[in-house]
Picture 1 (cartoon, rainbow, N blue to C red):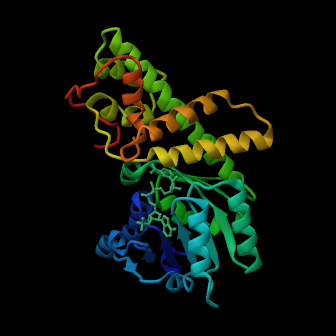
Picture 2: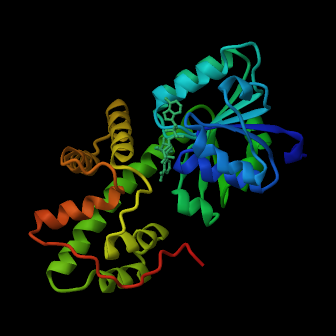
Picture 3: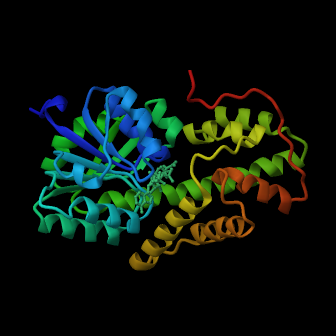
Length: 308
Ligand SMILES: NC(=O)c1ccc[n+]([C@@H]2O[C@H](COP(=O)([O-])OP(=O)(O)OC[C@H]3O[C@@H](n4cnc5c(N)ncnc54)[C@H](OP(=O)(O)O)[C@@H]3O)[C@@H](O)[C@H]2O)c1
Protein backbone atom coordinates (compact mmCIF):
# COMPACT_ATOMS: atom_id res chain seq x y z
CA UNK A 1 0.00 0.00 0.00
CA UNK A 2 1.49 3.41 -0.93
CA UNK A 3 1.94 5.84 1.97
CA UNK A 4 -0.98 8.35 2.03
CA UNK A 5 0.25 11.62 0.50
CA UNK A 6 -0.64 13.65 3.56
CA UNK A 7 1.67 11.53 5.73
CA UNK A 8 4.78 12.67 3.86
CA UNK A 9 6.36 16.10 4.04
CA UNK A 10 7.39 17.40 0.64
CA UNK A 11 10.04 20.01 -0.11
CA UNK A 12 10.27 21.87 -3.42
CA UNK A 13 13.29 23.68 -4.88
CA UNK A 14 12.73 26.05 -7.81
CA UNK A 15 9.53 27.81 -8.73
CA UNK A 16 10.32 29.07 -12.22
CA UNK A 17 7.81 28.62 -15.05
CA UNK A 18 7.67 24.84 -14.61
CA UNK A 19 8.40 24.42 -10.91
CA UNK A 20 5.76 26.94 -9.90
CA UNK A 21 2.96 25.09 -11.68
CA UNK A 22 4.18 21.64 -10.61
CA UNK A 23 4.49 22.60 -6.95
CA UNK A 24 1.13 24.36 -7.28
CA UNK A 25 -0.55 21.11 -8.29
CA UNK A 26 0.86 19.34 -5.24
CA UNK A 27 -0.24 22.18 -2.96
CA UNK A 28 -3.72 22.29 -4.49
CA UNK A 29 -3.90 18.50 -4.19
CA UNK A 30 -3.52 18.81 -0.41
CA UNK A 31 0.17 17.86 0.03
CA UNK A 32 2.13 19.17 2.98
CA UNK A 33 4.65 21.13 0.90
CA UNK A 34 7.39 23.65 1.70
CA UNK A 35 8.88 25.57 -1.23
CA UNK A 36 12.08 27.51 -1.77
CA UNK A 37 13.02 29.71 -4.71
CA UNK A 38 16.15 31.83 -5.18
CA UNK A 39 13.86 34.74 -6.03
CA UNK A 40 11.44 34.33 -3.14
CA UNK A 41 8.73 36.58 -4.62
CA UNK A 42 8.07 34.05 -7.39
CA UNK A 43 7.23 31.36 -4.82
CA UNK A 44 5.07 33.47 -2.56
CA UNK A 45 1.72 33.11 -4.41
CA UNK A 46 1.94 29.36 -3.67
CA UNK A 47 1.17 30.31 -0.07
CA UNK A 48 -2.42 30.91 -1.24
CA UNK A 49 -2.72 27.16 -1.89
CA UNK A 50 -1.34 26.11 1.47
CA UNK A 51 2.38 25.81 0.60
CA UNK A 52 4.87 27.05 3.17
CA UNK A 53 7.45 29.37 1.56
CA UNK A 54 10.84 29.02 3.27
CA UNK A 55 13.88 31.31 3.26
CA UNK A 56 16.71 28.80 3.10
CA UNK A 57 17.44 25.54 1.33
CA UNK A 58 18.54 24.00 4.63
CA UNK A 59 14.92 24.20 5.80
CA UNK A 60 14.01 21.68 3.11
CA UNK A 61 16.53 19.07 4.30
CA UNK A 62 14.12 17.95 7.03
CA UNK A 63 11.34 17.06 4.56
CA UNK A 64 10.73 13.42 3.50
CA UNK A 65 10.85 13.92 -0.26
CA UNK A 66 12.48 16.91 -1.94
CA UNK A 67 11.77 17.80 -5.57
CA UNK A 68 14.18 19.93 -7.57
CA UNK A 69 13.27 21.92 -10.71
CA UNK A 70 15.93 24.47 -11.64
CA UNK A 71 17.74 25.10 -14.95
CA UNK A 72 21.04 23.32 -15.56
CA UNK A 73 23.23 20.68 -13.90
CA UNK A 74 25.41 23.42 -12.37
CA UNK A 75 22.31 24.90 -10.73
CA UNK A 76 21.19 21.49 -9.48
CA UNK A 77 24.62 20.88 -7.97
CA UNK A 78 24.60 24.27 -6.27
CA UNK A 79 21.17 23.87 -4.65
CA UNK A 80 21.82 20.28 -3.58
CA UNK A 81 25.12 21.20 -1.89
CA UNK A 82 23.42 24.05 -0.06
CA UNK A 83 20.47 21.93 1.04
CA UNK A 84 22.72 19.14 2.32
CA UNK A 85 25.36 21.34 3.98
CA UNK A 86 24.07 20.52 7.49
CA UNK A 87 23.30 17.20 9.20
CA UNK A 88 19.65 16.90 8.15
CA UNK A 89 18.76 15.01 5.00
CA UNK A 90 15.56 14.01 3.23
CA UNK A 91 14.79 10.34 2.58
CA UNK A 92 14.40 10.93 -1.13
CA UNK A 93 15.34 13.48 -3.80
CA UNK A 94 13.41 13.68 -7.07
CA UNK A 95 15.27 15.73 -9.66
CA UNK A 96 13.06 16.98 -12.51
CA UNK A 97 15.24 19.52 -14.39
CA UNK A 98 16.48 18.56 -17.86
CA UNK A 99 20.12 17.65 -17.18
CA UNK A 100 22.76 15.37 -18.68
CA UNK A 101 23.20 11.66 -17.96
CA UNK A 102 26.62 12.45 -16.48
CA UNK A 103 25.27 15.16 -14.19
CA UNK A 104 22.46 12.88 -13.06
CA UNK A 105 24.92 10.04 -12.37
CA UNK A 106 27.12 12.38 -10.34
CA UNK A 107 24.10 13.44 -8.31
CA UNK A 108 23.21 9.78 -7.74
CA UNK A 109 26.71 9.06 -6.42
CA UNK A 110 26.50 12.08 -4.11
CA UNK A 111 23.07 11.11 -2.75
CA UNK A 112 23.90 7.39 -2.49
CA UNK A 113 26.89 8.30 -0.34
CA UNK A 114 24.52 10.06 2.04
CA UNK A 115 21.95 7.24 2.00
CA UNK A 116 19.33 9.33 0.16
CA UNK A 117 17.16 7.57 -2.42
CA UNK A 118 17.22 9.31 -5.79
CA UNK A 119 14.79 9.38 -8.68
CA UNK A 120 15.69 11.08 -11.93
CA UNK A 121 12.33 12.38 -13.13
CA UNK A 122 12.43 14.85 -16.03
CA UNK A 123 9.17 16.08 -17.50
CA UNK A 124 7.42 16.90 -20.77
CA UNK A 125 5.09 19.88 -21.13
CA UNK A 126 5.13 23.60 -20.49
CA UNK A 127 3.47 25.71 -17.81
CA UNK A 128 0.17 25.80 -19.71
CA UNK A 129 0.29 22.05 -20.24
CA UNK A 130 0.73 21.58 -16.49
CA UNK A 131 -2.24 23.88 -15.78
CA UNK A 132 -4.31 21.77 -18.18
CA UNK A 133 -3.30 18.66 -16.17
CA UNK A 134 -1.36 17.15 -19.07
CA UNK A 135 2.23 17.09 -17.79
CA UNK A 136 4.02 13.77 -18.30
CA UNK A 137 6.94 12.54 -16.21
CA UNK A 138 9.52 9.86 -16.96
CA UNK A 139 11.28 8.35 -13.96
CA UNK A 140 14.27 6.10 -13.33
CA UNK A 141 16.04 4.90 -10.22
CA UNK A 142 15.17 2.31 -7.56
CA UNK A 143 11.73 0.82 -8.28
CA UNK A 144 10.80 1.00 -4.59
CA UNK A 145 11.49 4.75 -4.52
CA UNK A 146 9.36 5.17 -7.64
CA UNK A 147 6.45 3.30 -6.08
CA UNK A 148 6.62 5.53 -3.02
CA UNK A 149 6.85 8.73 -5.08
CA UNK A 150 4.31 7.72 -7.70
CA UNK A 151 1.21 9.30 -6.09
CA UNK A 152 3.02 12.66 -6.10
CA UNK A 153 4.34 12.25 -9.64
CA UNK A 154 0.93 11.24 -10.95
CA UNK A 155 -0.78 14.13 -9.16
CA UNK A 156 1.18 16.58 -11.34
CA UNK A 157 -0.25 15.44 -14.67
CA UNK A 158 -1.52 12.56 -16.76
CA UNK A 159 0.77 10.00 -15.14
CA UNK A 160 4.38 8.95 -14.94
CA UNK A 161 6.36 6.32 -16.83
CA UNK A 162 8.99 4.23 -15.05
CA UNK A 163 11.74 3.27 -17.49
CA UNK A 164 14.23 1.44 -15.28
CA UNK A 165 17.27 1.90 -13.08
CA UNK A 166 19.88 4.66 -13.02
CA UNK A 167 19.76 7.57 -15.44
CA UNK A 168 17.63 5.96 -18.17
CA UNK A 169 14.93 8.62 -17.82
CA UNK A 170 17.50 11.29 -18.72
CA UNK A 171 18.16 9.79 -22.13
CA UNK A 172 14.40 9.46 -22.72
CA UNK A 173 13.92 13.15 -21.94
CA UNK A 174 16.92 14.18 -24.05
CA UNK A 175 15.54 12.19 -27.02
CA UNK A 176 12.16 13.80 -26.45
CA UNK A 177 13.55 17.32 -26.55
CA UNK A 178 15.73 16.69 -29.57
CA UNK A 179 12.47 15.69 -31.27
CA UNK A 180 10.86 18.91 -29.97
CA UNK A 181 13.62 20.99 -31.59
CA UNK A 182 13.52 19.17 -34.91
CA UNK A 183 9.70 19.22 -35.04
CA UNK A 184 9.38 22.95 -34.32
CA UNK A 185 11.96 23.76 -37.01
CA UNK A 186 10.17 21.55 -39.51
CA UNK A 187 6.78 23.00 -38.56
CA UNK A 188 8.15 26.51 -39.12
CA UNK A 189 9.61 25.58 -42.50
CA UNK A 190 6.41 24.05 -43.86
CA UNK A 191 4.20 26.80 -42.42
CA UNK A 192 6.28 29.45 -44.19
CA UNK A 193 6.36 27.38 -47.38
CA UNK A 194 2.56 27.09 -47.37
CA UNK A 195 2.21 30.81 -46.66
CA UNK A 196 4.62 31.87 -49.40
CA UNK A 197 2.64 29.72 -51.81
CA UNK A 198 -0.51 31.64 -50.77
CA UNK A 199 -2.11 29.63 -47.94
CA UNK A 200 -2.91 31.59 -44.75
CA UNK A 201 -1.11 30.10 -41.76
CA UNK A 202 -4.32 29.48 -39.82
CA UNK A 203 -5.85 27.54 -42.73
CA UNK A 204 -2.71 25.46 -43.22
CA UNK A 205 -2.42 24.61 -39.53
CA UNK A 206 -6.14 23.90 -39.26
CA UNK A 207 -5.67 21.12 -41.79
CA UNK A 208 -2.40 19.87 -40.30
CA UNK A 209 -3.85 19.75 -36.79
CA UNK A 210 -6.78 17.63 -37.97
CA UNK A 211 -4.53 15.27 -39.92
CA UNK A 212 -2.58 12.25 -38.69
CA UNK A 213 0.45 14.56 -38.43
CA UNK A 214 -1.31 16.89 -35.98
CA UNK A 215 -0.46 16.48 -32.30
CA UNK A 216 -1.00 18.12 -28.95
CA UNK A 217 2.25 19.97 -29.69
CA UNK A 218 1.31 21.26 -33.15
CA UNK A 219 -2.05 22.37 -31.73
CA UNK A 220 -0.67 24.24 -28.78
CA UNK A 221 1.94 25.97 -30.91
CA UNK A 222 -0.71 27.12 -33.41
CA UNK A 223 -1.56 30.46 -31.66
CA UNK A 224 2.15 31.33 -31.74
CA UNK A 225 2.53 30.51 -35.41
CA UNK A 226 -0.73 32.14 -36.52
CA UNK A 227 -0.94 35.23 -34.33
CA UNK A 228 2.76 35.57 -33.48
CA UNK A 229 2.11 35.23 -29.76
CA UNK A 230 5.65 34.45 -28.67
CA UNK A 231 5.05 34.72 -24.95
CA UNK A 232 7.83 32.51 -23.62
CA UNK A 233 7.04 28.91 -22.66
CA UNK A 234 10.59 27.59 -23.14
CA UNK A 235 13.57 29.75 -24.01
CA UNK A 236 15.83 29.28 -27.03
CA UNK A 237 18.80 28.88 -24.64
CA UNK A 238 17.12 26.05 -22.72
CA UNK A 239 16.29 24.34 -26.02
CA UNK A 240 19.90 24.76 -27.20
CA UNK A 241 21.02 23.16 -23.93
CA UNK A 242 18.83 20.14 -24.67
CA UNK A 243 19.98 19.87 -28.30
CA UNK A 244 23.57 19.94 -27.00
CA UNK A 245 22.74 17.21 -24.47
CA UNK A 246 21.30 15.16 -27.36
CA UNK A 247 24.35 15.69 -29.56
CA UNK A 248 26.70 14.85 -26.69
CA UNK A 249 24.75 11.64 -26.08
CA UNK A 250 24.87 10.88 -29.83
CA UNK A 251 28.65 11.24 -29.75
CA UNK A 252 29.06 9.15 -26.67
CA UNK A 253 26.83 6.34 -27.98
CA UNK A 254 28.16 6.77 -31.55
CA UNK A 255 24.77 7.55 -33.04
CA UNK A 256 24.75 10.01 -35.96
CA UNK A 257 22.19 12.79 -35.47
CA UNK A 258 22.30 14.90 -38.65
CA UNK A 259 18.88 16.54 -38.23
CA UNK A 260 19.58 17.39 -34.60
CA UNK A 261 22.97 18.91 -35.53
CA UNK A 262 21.44 21.15 -38.17
CA UNK A 263 18.58 22.21 -35.92
CA UNK A 264 20.97 22.95 -33.06
CA UNK A 265 22.85 25.40 -35.26
CA UNK A 266 19.64 27.09 -36.42
CA UNK A 267 18.75 27.63 -32.75
CA UNK A 268 22.29 28.91 -32.18
CA UNK A 269 21.84 31.33 -35.09
CA UNK A 270 18.61 32.61 -33.53
CA UNK A 271 20.41 33.17 -30.23
CA UNK A 272 23.24 34.93 -32.11
CA UNK A 273 20.68 37.32 -33.61
CA UNK A 274 19.71 38.26 -30.05
CA UNK A 275 16.39 36.35 -30.17
CA UNK A 276 16.67 35.02 -26.62
CA UNK A 277 13.84 36.47 -24.58
CA UNK A 278 10.81 35.15 -26.43
CA UNK A 279 9.55 31.63 -27.06
CA UNK A 280 11.67 29.12 -28.99
CA UNK A 281 8.95 29.11 -31.67
CA UNK A 282 10.42 32.44 -32.86
CA UNK A 283 12.29 30.08 -35.19
CA UNK A 284 9.29 30.98 -37.40
CA UNK A 285 10.55 34.57 -37.64
CA UNK A 286 13.98 33.43 -38.77
CA UNK A 287 12.48 31.10 -41.32
CA UNK A 288 10.27 33.93 -42.64
CA UNK A 289 13.22 36.28 -42.93
CA UNK A 290 15.26 33.67 -44.75
CA UNK A 291 12.31 33.23 -47.12
CA UNK A 292 11.89 36.96 -47.83
CA UNK A 293 8.55 37.24 -46.03
CA UNK A 294 7.52 40.01 -43.65
CA UNK A 295 5.33 38.20 -41.11
CA UNK A 296 2.20 39.81 -39.66
CA UNK A 297 -0.16 38.38 -37.04
CA UNK A 298 -3.21 36.97 -38.80
CA UNK A 299 -5.42 37.97 -35.84
CA UNK A 300 -7.62 34.91 -36.28
CA UNK A 301 -8.94 33.22 -33.13
CA UNK A 302 -7.34 29.77 -33.02
CA UNK A 303 -7.50 27.20 -30.23
CA UNK A 304 -4.46 25.72 -28.54
CA UNK A 305 -6.09 22.36 -27.84
CA UNK A 306 -5.47 22.85 -24.12
CA UNK A 307 -7.94 25.47 -22.88
CA UNK A 308 -11.46 24.21 -22.42
N1 LIG B 1 9.62 25.46 -19.94
C1 LIG B 1 9.39 24.28 -20.48
O1 LIG B 1 8.56 24.14 -21.40
C2 LIG B 1 10.13 23.05 -19.98
C3 LIG B 1 9.59 21.79 -20.28
C4 LIG B 1 10.20 20.65 -19.79
C5 LIG B 1 11.38 20.76 -19.05
N2 LIG B 1 11.92 22.00 -18.82
C6 LIG B 1 13.16 22.04 -18.02
O2 LIG B 1 12.78 22.38 -16.71
C7 LIG B 1 13.80 23.16 -16.08
C8 LIG B 1 13.18 24.49 -15.63
O3 LIG B 1 12.69 25.18 -16.77
P1 LIG B 1 11.78 26.51 -16.64
O4 LIG B 1 11.23 26.76 -18.01
O5 LIG B 1 10.88 26.42 -15.46
O6 LIG B 1 12.95 27.57 -16.35
P2 LIG B 1 12.83 28.98 -15.60
O7 LIG B 1 11.45 29.53 -15.69
O8 LIG B 1 13.97 29.77 -16.15
O9 LIG B 1 13.09 28.61 -14.07
C9 LIG B 1 14.36 28.24 -13.60
C10 LIG B 1 14.27 28.04 -12.09
O10 LIG B 1 15.56 27.64 -11.63
C11 LIG B 1 15.98 28.53 -10.61
N3 LIG B 1 17.44 28.60 -10.67
C12 LIG B 1 18.22 28.67 -11.77
N4 LIG B 1 19.52 28.69 -11.42
C13 LIG B 1 19.55 28.62 -10.07
C14 LIG B 1 20.61 28.59 -9.12
N5 LIG B 1 21.90 28.63 -9.49
N6 LIG B 1 20.27 28.52 -7.80
C15 LIG B 1 18.98 28.47 -7.43
N7 LIG B 1 17.95 28.49 -8.27
C16 LIG B 1 18.23 28.56 -9.59
C17 LIG B 1 15.31 29.83 -10.95
O11 LIG B 1 15.28 30.68 -9.82
P3 LIG B 1 14.93 32.25 -10.01
O12 LIG B 1 13.43 32.32 -10.04
O13 LIG B 1 15.52 32.91 -8.83
O14 LIG B 1 15.58 32.69 -11.31
C18 LIG B 1 13.91 29.30 -11.32
O15 LIG B 1 13.18 28.94 -10.19
C19 LIG B 1 14.92 23.30 -17.12
O16 LIG B 1 15.89 22.31 -16.91
C20 LIG B 1 14.19 23.08 -18.43
O17 LIG B 1 15.06 22.63 -19.45
C21 LIG B 1 11.30 23.13 -19.23
